[in-house]
Image (cartoon, rainbow, N blue to C red; front, side, top):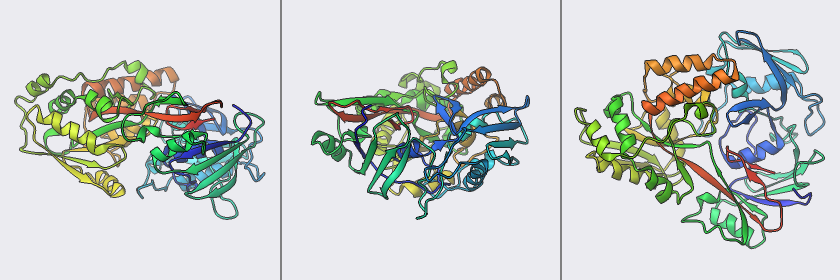
Length: 462
């Protein structure tokens, strides 16, 4: 990458409070440059980050993490184990972007966090916790500056200027690894972001998959595409109604034409989903599952003998996932083709919609997205009938629970991969949700410069 400055048009520019976790890829891009995660996520597994190494006892109940030697914040203050403990204490009671509590308090229930010395963090868990390093990949350590802004990190760039919601200027503090300066401008409209690159006002534009219509991928620009970990799904109400019956859950997965969604709605910038996790999640490779085949006739036969209500209610937001209403229309039409009557109910207030789904006010189906890159988190927050997390919608499969418990306590990396693979395979055979798609994200870079890349979480890497 050239040492010169680079200007990037992002959908939004912001740094959230230290205890605020977000799945917004624009904000995550900024965080990943200024702040370091405790552990780094690398396609399903945890690798060193601010924690340079770790070990655990044979039972997986006592974990010892070592901070990267000489780690310091951008104001020169040393980064200590007590900074980490303070950060974790705050994040255990943190709220998400919709004002709802995250699940970290539940994960860490009964855990004791200690600092044997300034460079060591020890965690004592009441039970084997094979996924602890995996959870730490969500945590980007930050401190507040004199103005109360959470922009002091230990990452490769420091914040030189920042106007919330408008722009940020980052300066590189490491001798190599990217442009000398990165200038991020908030440009909400994807069409305007693309125009900024074409007219020379920016070097890079992100999240161009959100442009209306099909992108032309013209030769005047350099393009980058990346399939992402995000899952576009419809929750199925397993607490009451039609989808308590596993035959109905499998039938709707057979009935919905995924190609009409990936090609028709998302203009080819999506891939059909096959289980609750993406191809980048831990366990997917060993699960070796394909999307449930589109077969409306088999779906219709599978519903023979199943008590079907007069009308199904399909709830949908207007965004998150993008093009939600169009996706819901495809679902309604596909289910109508096998004899099910579907009424689409649109909720324009996305935070309110999230709270309603968390409170199980979901109708029969509810369009949603699943963003955690951790297989553990997807299963614990959304699938496990033992955990009954905020997003659990009543799916109850005793065989699956046995597999989840086995995966949660597996310590050897290969055994964890295989154990989570069994969970994902079971969820392909006995679906918890209506599996739809994984989106492809798109960036454009002007000609003549080395382009950044996208990772599987959708963050721009320089």
